[in-house]
Image (cartoon, rainbow, N blue to C red):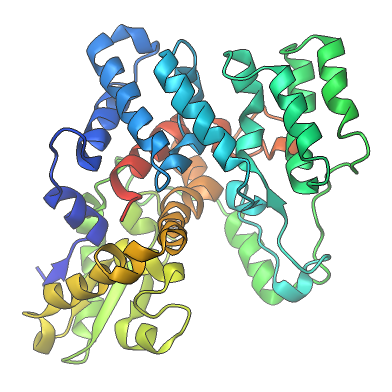
Length: 394
């Protein structure tokens, strides 16, 4: 077997202290409950108590509050009051966050010069969870009305709430008169329309063709929630081939959907050369935009750097975990953490990997809420929550 380093996210998780109050203990408690996958949270009372307590800890933490976006919806019902308070508090904070809408949909990002309005469409994604928060008593219509009044000039926020009105109406979550008060605050907004590209590029045609291609998963028995190193034997021959072509001092980082378990026989491995990354301002070591490249990949090195490979990897990932810069600037650290989130939970897995792997491709949420994707499916959310708890932190 070639000399390689398993992904840094796994090495850090395996080495972390799992004492009371630690992130690893919280992740273990969350995963123990979700691996049992009970139909009702009260079926396993001890695991239930630990699950909600661990979720509370993460929801109160600004670096991990975005786990709220992925928690399985069925376990919001009948949750402890302390959990509900932590959830609502985090939900209010996330009302200030504008995510790229396509991150939570099918990943159809248009090229910059093909975008009708020049930029990427934004959404306040936590607002799309409003129907369930109303249904399970986390918030009420009066609180939403106040939010709409206090933010009457915030078109992105209002549009995000407006996306949910039809689902709330169809499911009779609010009385007609109460829903009418809410809809009147967003009636002036235009209907949400999918932006059409100003031109169709060759790259886009290739992407559309690849997206619509059905194929059997390379590893049908993979555990999508990790650890990813369990999938290495399936791609070992490809790693051997890559390693055989390395220059003596060359280091490459290898990732992609085949490593994460939901790749198909047509999926390519993503390969980055460390020397090239170091010359790229966007992807140099320490850039928050490149966090996923250094943490979610296998590291391979030529024979001249075999003994130093782990030390080099630790020095680079240490920029994100130990450096004064990342400790001193919480917003930069959160950008880096969100890049891990995007790579592990959104790109490929949400956009196409989950459906290809599970065969679940029918969805029943209105398109205004970007419901024609697995985001609202509890099986996707169960996997995403486990990945978030174990691997989305610095």
